[in-house]
Length: 204
Image 1: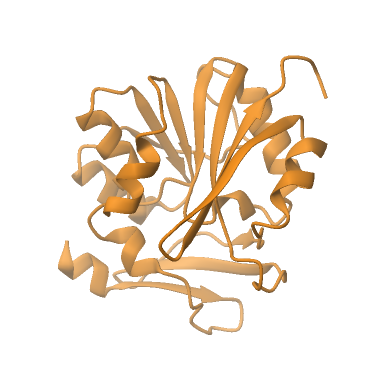
Image 2: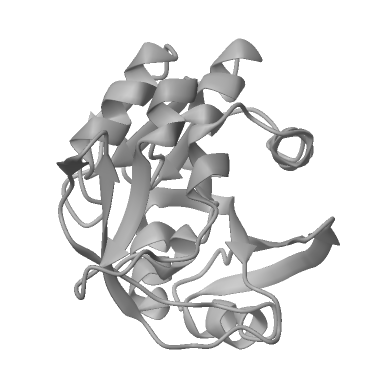
């Protein structure tokens, strides 16, 4: 895994390196992540933007049914090497078991995938069963909100471009309510911020 981690970069359209914790994403799962996964009560679980699949693999080790989806083939190769069940697919494409997922993970800032968090959350709502939950990882209150067009380079292999927006801990309550969710809780663990949203039973 160390070779893969050393060859992973995230760049914007101007060729600049983007200062995000890419090494952590491709490294072994951390204690903070395991505490987040403790909140997943059974399955099935859909990990949107799963990348190298550390959360999917950890859930599988716990006996929790989980599927990861991502559009970066080289990252999915890493996930499969970990034994994670993953698919090369966008969340906006046809997803298996739509409307029946118990939980959706939007960790590592993936609530910003596509550059329009509200659109993404409404799509995720359609994938969840009534009362299902979303766990999101958020940016701190001071984070800048500008969306960026970025792609991964894994061992010099470039993945597809995608837009990535910033959603802070201060944004999530209003965003959740406008997308058909009830904010269940928000918390900080070390230097990382998280939120749990619950799908409302009735249509938003």
